[in-house]
Length: 116
Length: 119
Image (cartoon, rainbow over all chains, first blue to last red; front, side, top):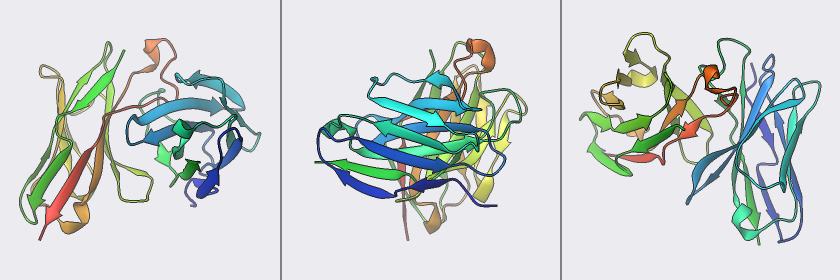
């Protein structure tokens, strides 16, 4: 079974631009979560989608947004990029088993964004 | 609110010696606890998880962790380190659904412990 796939793996943008990152979850997984990883702040939760609905959101500004499609694939978008948005963005999917908060998240290898 | 503190940012051991990575958590509910590992330029992989069953949890690659509610700790151990264990390890807490629906997809990560294994 293929794992979580994230594209692109690396990208460079300049301040003020916007970026869209894509995530394909493991087949059968309907929940997709996004995380930002930086050396200073560590891993921080961005948002979670299930059946095309955002169910949970972390403490990030409105420049960070996401969506999920009917095939469970997800995208996240960051508008008006700032230098501090440089990070590894990780997507994770989880199967529909067990109570929320108890199950394993399966992570992709991430999209590394550099903002110049 | 939940939080996780990993007590050591770096741990260095010799190959064949025991590994101890320390983690304390804070949660208003009965949490689920996890240890994830991240190798360089890779995503995160689950080592083991505790979800209110046995307090001693065995994971992959010989790792195990013990949940101690009285100490709010969930330390990760391995009897004998291998060179391939060198990586960054994250202790993670997740509150259950009765925390008001705020647990969907949300894991709270510690700051990570970098494990170095010397030959």
